[in-house]
Length: 474
Image 1 (cartoon, rainbow, N blue to C red):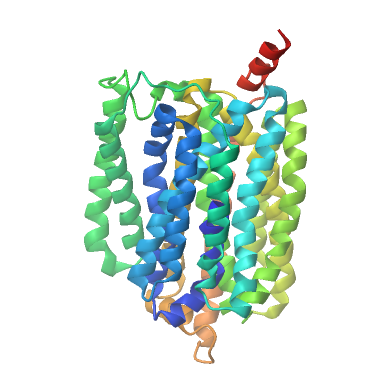
Image 2 (image 1 turned 180 degrees about the horizontal axis):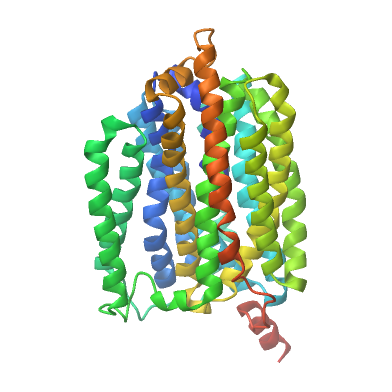
């Protein structure tokens, strides 16, 4: 559910822009608000889960996410929708930061890749399916239905999780909470992400964006210095010793770099199909099935094989294949409808690459950290991915405005379904999309190096599930 809502608005952005009279700035905030709230909350929630129990926080996440969905569906202007998306993002952080940690605690090591592969399929399939589902929903209902669908699912998930999930984790209660570290981290990260958003608006955003960026970077650097000095060594927000584990450090960096490239390209693909090729939201959603189908095939296969052969080869190969798909978009798309097969081929290749690396990378990260630090480790890897996601939208718009003026881009998105969209602006938009895809292909390829830090093969370990089996047999 959290995965679906991270992407479900992307295909619907032009429709929301028309109906709520929103410009590019508001549309960015509708996507950014969700990711910003999710990102800032992840480490705090991960630390809280280590203290009070992962299942309890996971259950509360369902409740808050469902409330946020109801508020989003009831919104009548951009500000209300943006605020509701922040509530959704907080609930999402409570769920996704704990899901992998709960599974890792309960799974024997020899099956970890397979189980995390299924979990990654659930989340990634949610993010991808959200793109397709958005188009289907918008073909038969108002954009508010994009959020209404979460309410019954959220109610069911809340009840199910309450009665079915049991706490198996080792709580880290002796450490307490690093409030100073949390304030430094959340303030610094929020300001950096807000600054990127403002800078994406062009020259008009520089007066606010540049000072925010400077202050945010200073706070973030001071947070790192503060934690490294060990002043809160008994209860750190982020255990810096985790970065001595190369699988953890490398895998987290892979997630951030790929998210930076993947998210920006995907929103541009969605806009390209609707603006340049005049596809409806339904046609756009159906086209994205090319990505869904190959990802769902490759993800479980790579998860099972990584248990046998190790994660490294799958993570490196998956990142390389994903970079190839971005090159296909950047080199071969045109304003002509003849480019639709190119888009479909690129999406299919991207699905194979994404499915190949995600679950082995998660398995390598989560299998490398101590059991009582998996809550914060899981939250941090998701934070890294979210930082990449949030930066991606702003960077994509910045790159687009090198080719097409911000005002023309704003007009294109607001009038995509009418003859008012100017052909010259559409041509400029396509050139901007090509630039975004090529730049992000290079960015994504740099993740091959940290991908080489992934485990060759997981070593045996006695998990909580194995311990229970042993106790029963004794």
